[in-house]
Picture (cartoon, rainbow, N blue to C red):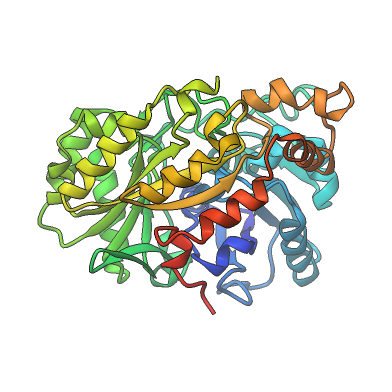
Length: 432
């Protein structure tokens, strides 16, 4: 038996929401079923883990939990601080990092965090696989399915994803479930409030070149009974609202129709995320009847179909999807992305007028060139002297150079967007 503590770092996003670390509780549930003693130290909410007993043998830091994994930050400072805090409290424990960062730059991540090991792959599967490798005697700094059998190398394979139907039930009891928050809808307005999290399906079959997909491009659905059991566990802990983290809610019409049928009459409110063309292919009134109160769309830009990033969604489709959601009583939200390559709407400033006229709340991101995306693979070497970045500092510099060379001041355009009345940040007041 290994005594394990998952470490969840703080990050700047905490000022708005502190979302449930779903991958941590999933991995913890499986490791506990494997016979280990497991705790979760969510440093965003807890000064110390609830159960430390005589200490821990292994500290597992998650560099970007599920709700942040698709848009993971390039700055590892908060993770390094969390690791150091945990190491000082439990000096005898080995340290392991899992998440997007070790998956894409394993040696650089291990060096920057100062951990003993990193493991590649989806957070929960990588954590479970790495513990099993360590139990089997592996000592490799980069743990993989080959650990202990082959020499360690930077070409280590990621741990394969554990089939969703084989995971033990998540260990919700290890975290303060009722204290987690996200955007909830009150009187048609988005407000920070108690909110859980559910992943009914993992993956995304679309190939947008700017998008990091921590769960891959193949859709994998959880059994409906398991999804409902996870929702019931969170309701029992005091939550009446959840966020469906599924990247393309509604893409499998049969799966989601049955899910919505099971959700009806449960008194559960929820928000999800999807694409405009998926909204247009579904009867979203079924979503509303099942408790859907808000839905995010990846709108990005009115000209995104012409930017060459493999997202062929038109301005008209976005408008129609927003109106269809609104007419069904579902509050529409839109992601706006500044700085796409060749985005005429961004360069001309038309993007601001488009966002202002959209009958939806919107959030803003400037484009990051993230390892794990094909856009990064295409652009990063040229922005880094002809070679691939080897450190996270070099990765950050690639994005800085990209933005500096962009033909319009993205910071000034973002400032204009934040002044619009339908900018989500003007509705949601930062915590504290």
